[in-house]
Amino acid sequence: MFVVMTRERFWPMFNLRTFSTILIVILFLVSLGTATAQDPQYGGTLVFGAESMGDSFDIGFWHGFGGVHVIDTIGEGLVRADFENGGAQPGLAESWEISDDGLVYTFHIREGMTFHDGEPVTADAIVRSMKRPINPDDPSYIEGMYMYGNQGASNWESLEAVDEHTIVLTLMQPNATQLLVFSRPDGVIISPKALDEYGTEVGLNVSAAGPFKIERFVPGQEAVLAANEDYWAGRPYVDRVVIRADPDEAGILAALEAGEIDMTLYAPFTSVPRLQNSDNIRVEVGAPLVNLFAGANVAMAPLDNLLVRSAINYALDREVLIEAGLNGFAEMPASLIGPLDLGFDESGREISVYDPERARELIAESGLETPIPLDLAYENNRFWPQLAELIAADLEAVGFDVTLDRLDTGSFWGKVGDGQTQLSINQRSTFVPDPHGKAILMARAGAEGSQTQHHALQAADELDALITAGISTADPEERAAIYQEFQALMLEQLPYIYIGYLTPPIFVNKRVQNVETFGTAGGRINLRGVWLSE
Image (tube, rainbow, N blue to C red; front, side, top):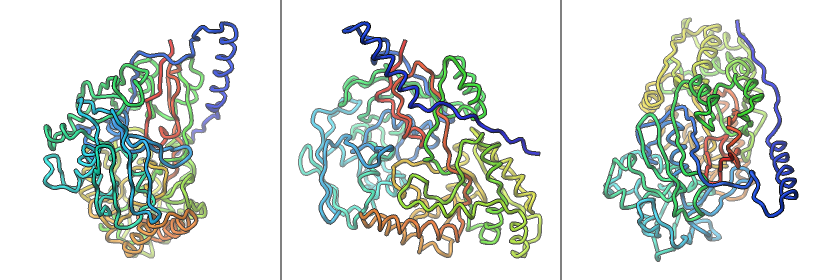
């Protein structure tokens, strides 16, 4: 029997901000010329609760969101992403030009910047860091780093520092997302001194150019980050940020309510009704930037059979999964592309209907003997265990015999990367505000190390061609049409079975001010402008 939970609607952030603005105006008029309690203040330590913390902050091999949060907090790339409005904003590059044919990017680097180790940020330093994944002779080179695919490096014809503050990147083919991908965590620029000194262990000794720098790191547990007094955009308000990992949602909730952590995405969703009445905590709802899905290893029986994948799709009662597994904090899915992405096709929601009878028919049509053995892998944190149990129940009801494989974050991704999972549930966040960030999961390059092993798909080459076409034109209408074709083909092939678009609650102590929530909903926290009230 399923217990279906519902969520209460709570005041949007607009009302809280409006109230704060009115309060500031009143206090200002009463005490003209005197600083109010709502003026930004310097000082204090902000503690962020994460669900996991890897053993390295190497931008080429991070695992778990704790690592991503640290990289985002200490790092800076050529540009920043504007998640709310789309497009790129200046980062280490204060400006840039793109040639009419979309092949030549000229970046103008800010003057006077330094890395955390005191070394100057120059065009040569940036180029050295960017070339790391394509230079096997670099002492920090490790085969298979994320940057090679995510940064589009295979499409770079040349990357050169033409003077101390100018970089010219020439592409072989146009790439509509090239500018935005430089804002990804794997686009963070690392000091050449650190790359030389620490080599392949640079992930334990990252020296970047962002607003905070690593003061102390306990692998798997926490990172203490100190304000960068020399940050090019000005010293951040808080003195320190501590990002602390706890895979136990109950532990994160207890720490949040005790005031031991100030902000998190990882408290239990079921705690929202209580916390929205808290004197010390506010809860904000994030945008649907994260896609939850079950990835099917199409190179491994029985998931190499499309009939079986289709049966899994129809077996899932997504309304129950969203209400009971996510406490209502998700929207019904349609495709790998999200509802805020260019080219989103909502007609895909039609295939997300719950039809267990159809699932049984498809299993019978497959000719496989029931119950069909199936392993379901998942991480041992957040809502994943609850979702896994609900999914297993749905699958067993139509003719599968499910074995649950509960893993810590590192083991989960190791197993996925080795192609050793059958069915596994996880998510794809919007690391850049563009549909390519999700479509790239189906790229032919790197498929052998992917969750779905999609090189084995009948339509693998066709999907890869659509991904290439999607970034080869800058025209938004043409790109939208390409991504709609991509979504339709994905629904035919079903390497992923979609669960929902997460609209995550963001839990914040009321003393934490100026929180940027839009990117945070997709896992990209921005603590540059956060400050703590008394």
